[in-house]
Length: 220
Image (cartoon, rainbow, N blue to C red):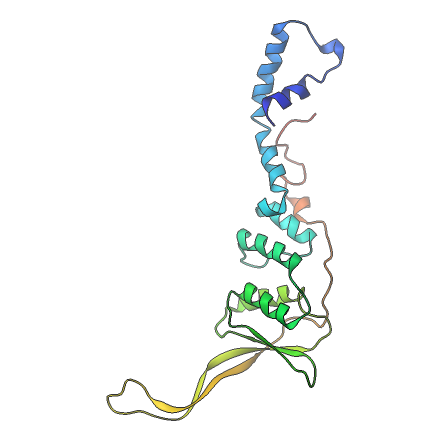
């Protein structure tokens, strides 16, 4: 709050408490100037209540209310982008799953193949991804994939060669190239896709700056 707004609050008194003359005005103007220094933090707090500009505690509050909790080891910057992207992401289609998985895993080496005969689909992901990244991806995928449709996940492995041989002094070896292999990735996700469930964040209950136990301005 700027000093003029603080002054208007201080001057909001019953007529019996007001005094004529410049001395009274000067005293209250001085008080308003001092008090305004303690209300700047409240302005910053109000600014942080907007999702695109929130950080730390307020960002977690937004995410939990929208049913998108923060992942382990996730930065505020990426978490803010992920929450906003989740709300507008296409869901239920193979292309939607593929696009979302590439965004979350940070690689274009993700492909979704439909099984048109038996039903369902297969998600192929790149090899060597950190286990925590895969765990976070499974949690994020819960909002994007269609509920009740069977699927499996495969990780690409190193290329396979057969009948290899080499020449003395050669820089490499020859043989039959069989391409990349795959290995199954154990699923860490249930069969259902739950809708977003807006919840009051626990941060509101334990953070003194958010639950009102610490006053950043003055009461009026």
